[in-house]
Structure formats: structure tokens, C-alpha cells
Length: 517
Image 1 (tube, rainbow, N blue to C red):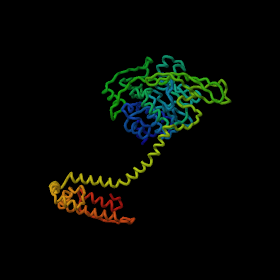
Image 2 (tube, rainbow, N blue to C red):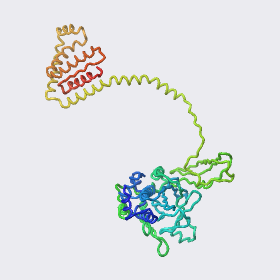
Image 3 (cartoon, rainbow, N blue to C red):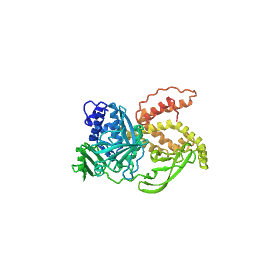
Image 4 (tube, rainbow, N blue to C red):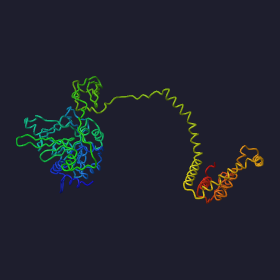
């Protein structure tokens, strides 16, 4: 991240010492070059508050952002230039309900220069152009309006009079519009992540409901909301500002973003302009009178809450702690009460009583546990044999997939030997001889077929037959071995396909200490 590239992005060159002149210059230049926009949300992407991501988007990709992005990166630039910077949280006044938004609704910046505090905000869209002094409450005139900061207790209100309002009612202190309120308590960037996600997904947020892009001009402002292009100029000689509205096509919007705002998007975005659902009305909380009744006082209020297409009534409970020294006529103002923080309550944790269902599940688990352990041990015992069988099947498949040319004729010879053996087994002499050899076994009829097939296979595949014979002999020796240690045996087989490869793997497995199957 190179702050010099950032300065070039906003049209600032030369040395930038941490002075009020530098602060005013980069503040105004930022508003004139970096758009206030939310197009990332309508591209189906998520806004990230990480500084490298903001730098890449605003500086390298020539994009803009909303307050968390523009003010977030601007505060980093001020710190790099040597300014004393504090990040503050503000609550914006809703123009539909006249209620203030939740905490961390808006990110602003306070810069301290030689003990003098200045309010900076390059991410509001229609705010002041130059930093406002926080040391005075009188009006501060700028090119596109008159502004003031008004202190009430710990809260500071940022208010505005537009040029048209001044013309209509030139009296001082008339037609002041509250834009947002804030305190001087410093915050961290991570404190705004939850509200940043809220503004990307809530039907109460303008950023979710409308695709917008706005930029300050030397003589006014240009704003794109949905398909509507709004051009606002400074008051004319007759004293009235000029505002024009035009509907644009998709092609005209793309051209406008490129030529006027300098934005070329990497992908298309959804042009959106739907009605904003008013957030819950909290006017009823303007002032809550408290009753002195000991250490805890409880006041119940009825309020109507709107929830995304569903209206219903519910009761709200406000809990405030009292002090024994408090006056009986004391009151709690809404500015002193956070409606978004769960009030503290003394709750005693009680362990849930175990029921019949829990007892039954525990008994079943205890009953099944020995069988589970047995199954695990049995699987460990047969796992080597399963692996050998899998390797044998794999070798057999590879062999059958590309057999040598003599394989199928050999299979025919072995099969014919088996048929010949079945035919010869029908003779009486053969049956009598078979009976004597196998002592009356019921499978005596298979003696000749199996013998002839084995003989044919041995003649066709002498190397594999030798491997099988060695394996049988080795297995018998291992079974008869009575010592605790197994002999180390090095065997070399020449068979590389089918049963030969499988036998070779089995022999190595047994020789290295594996179980015998």
C-alpha cells in the first residue's frame, strides 16, 4: 500500500505536511474524485473492510465506496501523512421516520491539529465539502451549504442548511436539518463490521434497496440512483438551485459510469431502485420518565414495530438502574439509553433436570459401547486382509484389461481340461479310485476336473505356479513356527501380473509381520 499512489488517485501532488491547509485540500479532492457508491453489493459481492482490499478497490481499480470504505481508507491516508486521527461512530437520521439509526451506522473521522479538533467525512454522499471545526457551534459556510455542529450533553449533532433553505427562510437557526449524531469516543475499524453486513442485506438500508453512485462536482453534484440520473447545480443568479432528472438505459448507465465516474466494472451489476422499508419507529422513546422505587425501576412502553412486510404489536421493556442519591424527578433521555443493547439483568442459572429420554439414550449408549469396541478391534484385525484382497482385485483387473496374447487360448485349454475331467469322472473305475483317494468325500467328482485344470495351468504358466507353491510352503512354515519373533524372509518372484503379483504382495506382507489369512 503506497500512500503516494493514493494521493495521485485524488489529484494531489507535491509535499503534504500535516497542516490544516493539507487537510482541507485532500478532503475536497477526495470528494471530487472518489465516488460515493454501493455497486459492489449489487454485483453479488461482499464489501470487505480490510485495508488492503479497500486500497486495491479505491486506488488500484479506480472505484469508490460507501462510508465504511471511503472514510476507512481515508483515515489510513491521514495517519500515513502524520495526522492525529480518531475513528468515530455516528447514527444517521432516517429521512422517512426521523429516527436515528443504530450505533456504528456511519463511520466518521476526527483529526486533532495543535489542540483543535476537526470533523472529516468523505463518505456521506451529500455532506460538507471541507472539514468542520468541532470547537465552535456557530454556522460554518461552504460552497454547497451552511453547516454547524451542536453539542447536547455527550452527543454532538451535525446539522445542515442547504442554499435553497437559506433562500426560503434566511433567519438564523431556522430550517436546520439534523444529518447525524455522534460522540467523541474513539472506535476501531472492526467495530463497524456488523453494521457493514447489515447495510448489505437489510431492506431498511438504502444501500441494499438502491444501486447508487454519486460524485461531488465543482458546481453541484451528479447522482445515479437505479436508472435515474440526477444533476444538481449551485443556485443560479436568481437564487434557486437547478435539479434535473433523466432515466437512462443499460448502455447509457455503463457509458456514464466510465466517462463521468471513471468506473469500469469487472462484471455486470443489478440496477436496483426499490422502496426502502421504514425501520422500527422509536419516537415513543424520546423521553422516558422514571419512577424512584428503590434500586431498580421498570417502565413498560407500547410501540409499533415494522418487520420486513409484517406489522405487529409488541411491548418493549426498558430497565434502568437507579441510585439512592438520585432525585425523585430525574428523567432518562433517549440519547442516554442504547436501544440496541440488552439491559443487564440478574439471572440465576438452574441446571436442567435430566428426563426419561436422556436416561434412555445414556443406557443405550452404555449397552452398545462393548459391541462398538469389538467391531473396531475386529476391523483392525481383518483390515490387512481386506487391503490384500483389494490389491489382488486391482492387479487382476489390470491383467484382464490388457492380457498377453496367449492368455485367452490358455483359458480355453484350462477350461477344456476341466470339461474332460468331468467326463472321465463318470467312469466306474475312476469313481472307485477317487473314492479310495479321498475317503468317501462328496466332492470326489471334482477331483479329476480340478487336477486336470491345475495341471494345464501349471504347464501354461510355470512361473506363477512356482510362486503359488512357494507361498503355500512358506505359509505352512509360518503356521508351525512357535517363536515370538517372525523370521525375516526375502523372496523374489518373477511374476508381475495377475496372481503372481498378488502372491508377491501377500508374501511380503506376511514376512514383515502382518497377520496370516
